[in-house]
Image (cartoon, rainbow, N blue to C red; front, side, top):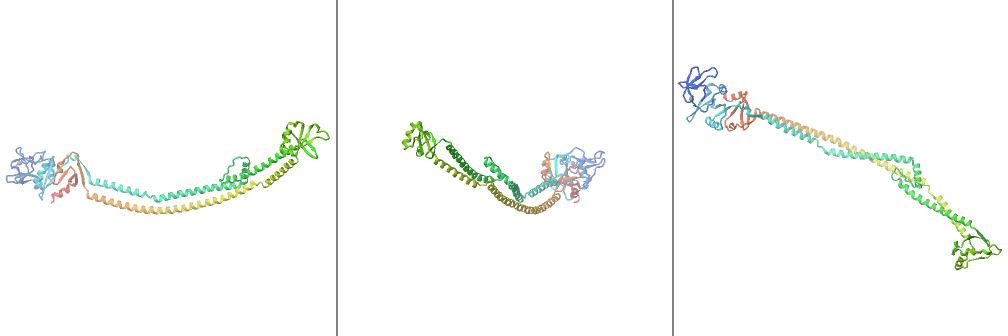
Length: 490
Ligand SMILES: [Zn+2]
């Protein structure tokens, strides 16, 4: 066993080592020699190697330095219980044993000593294993977590702010309506141009249209509805034209017939002019007004002139036709043809007179149509323009409402944010106050022994503060002054 700072004299008084001094061990009462060298601090040593207190480890400068903070009378105090004696490193005024532990000890050893001393605390030299556990400030850990949740909440506020779809949707729909009303106005404006232009060049259009009827060519109208009018007149025009042409060709044919009859050879008989024809050109209907001239005496004063007796008689001439000439009285035929021509001519003239002035008709109809179109065009234009204004007014109203609502929301959210910030600052303050100097630590390589202790444990890592063990994996930083106040001045 180790060295002591105090031994006993013959009377049992504590004495410090002095050169060549002799004393007795306070535990085993064996003789002790004072060691007063130049390198090591002065101390007592048993004169023979002995292990009188197995609990004592070899005293180091670290032990000595700690012990010397306390009054001499508190150091190396013998504690006796049930006949068992041990030297406590320090015993404070209120009977708390302080043990300074330099080397690692087992859980069992710790528990045995704690049960012997009862009211005790440990100061552990943790310098050597200060790199063996990682320490994290509770304050910074908790502040980090708090800040994370605060930022998360703020983000949620911002995303709340950005959602105001009701007004936006309404305004979007109205803007679309407005655009469609604008488009209608543009279309109507273009149509107005076309209508006005057509009205100005109406005469030209009508002429072209009539030419297209006559020549059967395609006529393109810039205004929808005009070709329908044109088609209607066109069919009337065609009907009438066909009728006139038909009469004309009939008259021509009749005139040709008349001319043909007039150019035929004639034969005068009893004051009637007959036309000579071949037998083949006769038919039963003509036999009444035909005569038969015998060729052999036709140039005499009394030529033989016969008439067909009946139909049978007419047929018998077929085989003796070369002996006769045949002639037909055409007076009635000519009268009929002339009559027909006169009648057809008067019909023709009548049609000519009644033939419509298509140019004028078409002009009137086109103009009427265009004027009507202009009226409805104007109506549509003004309706669209009024609707556009109406929609614009609605948009303005909604925009004002939206701005008001935005402002309200803005106020609401900034207030919320303010409150959130205040709460955050408050919590920050609380954390800093509550967890000030508190640390969590993790053994890198396990040193479980100190987790079993029931007495206070202080780790000395060689700084001007200690870590007090305040729970599993929990340390609190305390200054050496505070530690001393806690145990020295009681
Ligand atoms: Zn001894």
